[in-house]
Image (cartoon, rainbow, N blue to C red; front, side, top):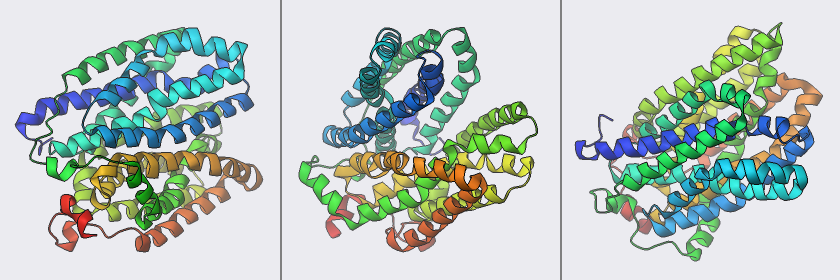
Length: 422
């Protein structure tokens, strides 16, 4: 916040409040979706797996569409209004539509739920983050110092959402709907200055057209970035999916392991909040590409050491590093996209090249990873996944585009003119 102009401070507080409420709502309600599906919708583990698979499919489809819409409408808030409105419908949807459908016509309920959840959350969060990144650059702010409030919102809701759920899941959904209405008020009051001093660096004069997306898909830089996501980000997120199962094996009492894992989740959220304050400055100094490569090194090292770990103390120290990885990855991704891709396709690039690719990883790698856990154990699987992350980090050192940083002692990237030059 120190570098945020005084005249923009009010807008900083508004956009930060919006992000806080969005993640607060997600954590308080959708964060407990798997438990709700099992305990309240009475679905089996196999059917719950199908729910998340279908959710992923619809999310992969919708994210690029959201990205294209964001690039088309620029700084207009219409898409965010739609996302918030869908979020506000959470309580009536879950109570009167989703649960009855899952019980009476499970497959139809799964499809309807996937459409709703993608509109409001799975694609909605990517749209909110992409808009926040563009808003921050337009106003001379740092995305990370806004996004950190989302981590705090998630942590605050996590501290009591389970207790509220035990009373009645309806309370969680009602809380989510009420918080969404507050979010809508905040969004309505948010002022967007498209004539700011940074407008030329952030906003494109020409709006995106389908040919721009086609050109993006033919770009070597696009596929080089996707290769990085597939080799590093997939390993990072997929390893985390069942990390809790591995973690508790280090404790004689599984209940103690569960408790410690919960405590470390809080530590991780706190680390995310603190890291978002400083990571943007760090990435500005070293450059986005180096930020991405450091993420790969940390992910690879953490997974390999996790596989070699022989004590609960070591594995407990490693767990919160995931929070550092998330911060450094997200900030580096946004800055890399801003540096190396046309302003017209920034949101499309984020939602297609990063967000949609992550969900493709869930579909492609989650099942083989689970099979390896059963066949050769978590230890050997994590060593393999960590080695893959390191291998793709080395490859990406040569395939990702050169970074702009103070280390190279070069003038700041002229985003407005760089694409013409290329």
